[in-house]
Every structure is written in structure tokens, then in C-alpha cells.
Length: 170
Length: 129
Figure 1 (cartoon, one colour):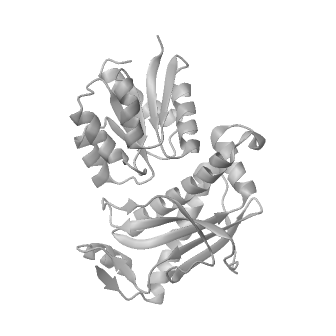
Figure 2 (cartoon, each protein chain N blue to C red):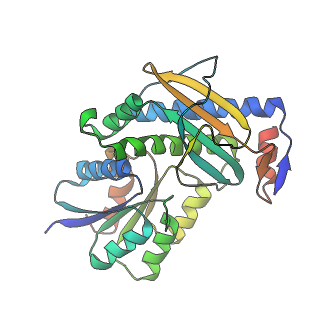
Figure 3 (spheres, rainbow over the protein chains, first blue to last red):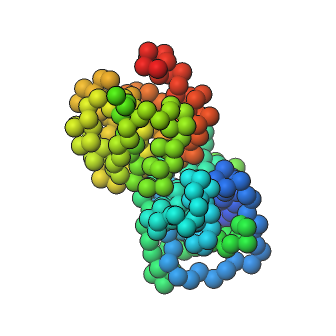
């Protein structure tokens, strides 16, 4: 495992990549751009997460209002929100996180590099987890979303991925 | 007789969406089969070896799409065309999947237009459409 001390510039870069990934995801899914907020909302309640496994070890956490989940699923499937099951609504949040993680890693990694994601899971905000690196709050059609990127104390990369570190430091 | 299409994804939302896109592209004379992971997908394929087309997600529990593609190839389902649909799009992974026998790798979200442009010509080339 290669451990890298991140500078504030690195963190800013991650934040910028993550915002672009969030925008791209929602534009593709529901043709709407998020309005990012200056002040981040405190974490509370249950979050869905997806772990980034290789080459970067990190966790992406997301919370999306039920109204927005319904809007996403309704737009994707072309059916009325009242006909959507809870399973479908939960899956919608998982799909959103998965897509954001994919866009983020494609921005971060050198072209052609492979990466792996874990499966969606749930955790309560009171559960301890790695240091929060970037926390983004936004509104989409007036519905709040909260997306966090959490790394361990330092960014951890799997062995042999020096080019990823170089890319981040560019 | 309706042609069988197997859709494998751990997300019910994604399965439903992929079904809709396939129907809009290839018509209604299709019988859809579903599975939520590669392992169940193989079981479904085992009793439906005549499945014409399989759309599988990459990142799934129990057996991922990559393992599924390898198993399909090694199990001798020569008439089954596997398309991998994933948000983890990158060139290196795509190359591996094609080498293992997938006919195409598509990035999420798919759409009828993407199916028309990417999959229809491949199926025509194989003389299936």
C-alpha cells in the first residue's frame, strides 16, 4: 500500500472532480444541474455508500431525498412516482452513487487505468468512518443531496499505482 | 416464438430500465428473463440455453459480470451474445471483457439510441438480426 500525504491543493482537485462527477451524473439522469451550496449540511441519518477499492481506497457516501430518488426513478423508467416500489427507490440512489464514483475515478485516474468499486451498502452517520475529505451539499430541483468522499487519514493507493499519485499531483 | 433475453443486474431499477430500452430497440416479440447476479444468471441460462441475448452489469454480488462472461464462454453457450453494461467504463477493462467473449461493453446509462448504434450492427454482422 502506498500512502500519500495530501496537500490542500490535492483536496481542492478532488472536490472539483467530485462536483463535475455529480453534475454529469444528474444531467445524464434527469437533465438537471445541481446547485452547489457554499455551506455544507451536517451529516445526519442514514447514508448509502460505495467503496472505491482499487487503485484508490476511499468511500463515497451519499444521501438523497426520497422525493429526488422518486424523480430519478420516475424519469428513468417513465412511470409515475406513486407506482415505484421502495426497492426501486433505494436502487436509484445506489445507481446515482455508482455513476458518480465512476465519473470521479475516470477524471482522477490516467486514461485507460482500471478501477474497481464495491457494492452499495448502508451506514448511519453516527458510525465511525474514515476522515471526511470532501463534503458537498447541493440542491437539485430544490431537493437536498449530500455527497461525501472519505479517505483514511492519508490517501491510500494499492501497490504499483504511482502514476495515479503523479496524476493527482499534476 | 419469442426470443429470450436475459437481463442481469443487482439493481431492480437498472433491470427494468434495460428491459425498456431493449424493447424500444428490438420490438416486443421478446421474452425477458432476469437475475440479480452472475451466479443466478448462469442458473437461468442453464435452463434457457437458447437465450439469444444477455445484458449483464459488471459490479454485482456473488458473481460479477466479468466472471459471468468467463463462465458463459467456458460453458460453451456459443449462441449467447453477452453485452456488458457498466458505469465502470474504461478501455483496459473493456478490452479484457471483449477478450473473454463479450460482444460489446456499454457505459451506463444505456439508451435505445446507443443500442441501435452499438448493438444492432453487431447482431446484424453475426446474422442474428
